[in-house]
View 1 (cartoon, one colour):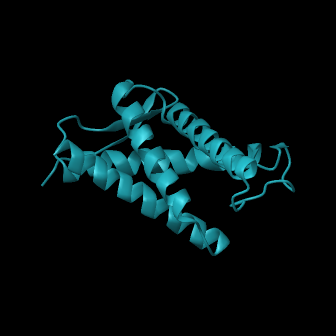
View 2: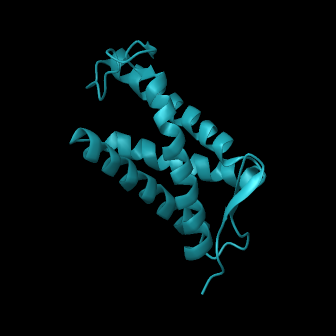
Amino acid sequence: MKLLRKTVLFLTGFCVYITIEVCFRGYSYPVMGLCGGVILLIIDLINEEISWDMDILLQGCIGALIATLFEFIIGSICIRFGFAVMWDYSDMPLNYRGIICLPYTLVWIPVSIAGIFIADAINYYVFNRLTVPYYKLFGRTIITYGKRQ
């Protein structure tokens, strides 16, 4: 059951990432779908290991840093070995070698928060995980999932 849950989360991250890129750029690369699947698995793992009381904005920032790290690693590999460059942030402010940039790191924050919500919904509603997810923003509970039907 654990392998099935991880597979569903991975495929969800894969499909969501590809969908986001196609909607905003008109195309994507399969390796970026793999990246999206792995990022969702890591975000889910971190989310399971930390307290539910951690602010959702902080969790989103952690997810954004993970996504930016993946962009940096994949972008560096592409440049180093002469693979197709999948994106170029050279014209963006606060970029590093055109591989990563601060504006897109900030975009990853709400995307990571959405990933947390999606992963938790899959874990709770599809796989009947016992812990009821809830989220805090600035110390106040803002969302808690309803009971399963």
